[in-house]
Image 1: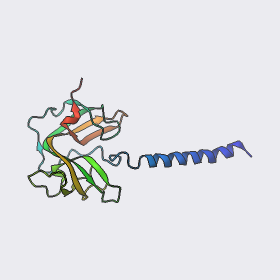
Image 2: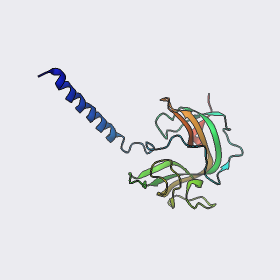
Image 3: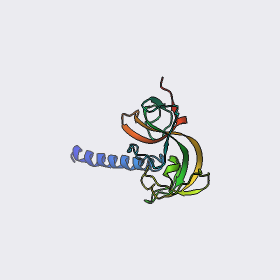
Length: 178
């Protein structure tokens, strides 16, 4: 039998196996794998710009969080700064995906029928944002709440992917550039 004919099926089988294993390993490791990393510059109605942010619009800061691969250690340009209550939430996507635990971040203005008062951990809310597929309209539980300044940022991941208008990074997730 010709050696080349035997190599092709073996290579195809190996490639299929690697694709299968890769899909399995990524199934629920990163709740931000379906996240819309870049977005529009539009902000939710009622969101107030920060009057005295630590990082001014147009300035640079280092990202200390890892909402997505390649984010931590990237230099960000501040596009917007806003004072609000920021939440981590757990929810089951409306598109039938697996439950997402402790998603960072949803802001007060991205919750349906949010009044003036912040929500408290344990309360159930309806999300009104599409950071990730299946998020808009999903019922969510508030895991944590914190009043702070949030930033919309542009950056290039450490892998070189350009991300624009990323929502949201908290003030505590940024540090001054060196």
